[in-house]
Image (cartoon, rainbow, N blue to C red; front, side):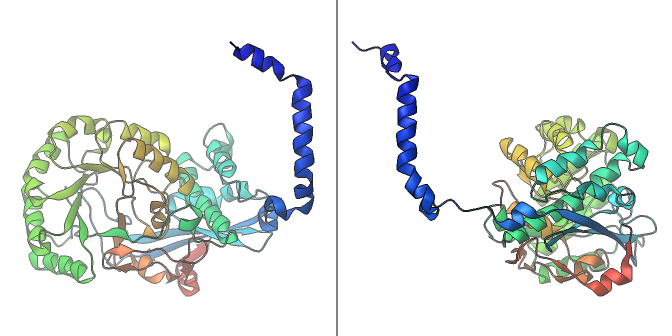
Length: 424
């Protein structure tokens, strides 16, 4: 009987060297021919690109009205639509753009974007860690950046890097990520509270407008009036849209635990897809565990989590069915993809908050994408309707991403000039 130990002893160092030398001789002619091995060289653009400059524009446009949730007016009590746009330049001529929220303005106006200067944009993971590391230690305090502003600033900067990479590859971002451009379902957010009070005719007219725009899903605001008044609004809306139409509701952290339980049971007959952020800020995560036991409606949350660690805490409650992490608000696509993978492993669906022109690309590349949030009111979200000369369109309640390299949007320079201020 031959043992393994005896067989192994046959392969001495001399045998190994002889085999290696023979293999090298056999491969040498093919290697000399170059193409015979079919090993492509690294594109010069990828090898040589370096970031040379970061520009930042901050846009603000006054809103005509206050659009109230349960806890706040959209855009502040003196309401404004706000947007940050960064442009990251490279020495190869290609540039990337990214959009963000006003939370990043402080850090960006004080040089946070300079962290990217000299870096290779294809080393996106390294750059992301470099930026995130600034949230620890003393540098942020010395620079006057503040934590939340740094996390907010990371979002457009990181998006711009993905724009550069996919542009350089000549691919739309969704294809660069390995996604397929199937139409993605969209819902429209509306039915905010008005300062003039409840008006049934206006409510029905608003909902009818969304139906006429082709939407088949709508998220409404709740928590800003009595539970019974919200039930009345929900009944009217359901009667208007019919049964073959998805409805979601967003409390914006407007209820306590007892109110959430009561409201969920009273609203259950109207067949809501989810109940979003039901609990007050101080119990918004741990309280979901208790609520889940007595809530007949699936739960959604996550738009206010600003990194994967907070998202993990939320997912690990076992209470949420939909995660709404927003990569334009915090941390960028690099972090969003990590969060989406974690959510998938827990059976949680992704329904990202806001900005479908970016989130749509990411949704094509994950197994657990559910739906995109959009807005259908030019007074509530004027930049969606005015800022772009090129953007993906919403047709019959679905979005298909643009088949152009990068993220694909182009900005109207007249709008940029009218509402924008250069801050870096």
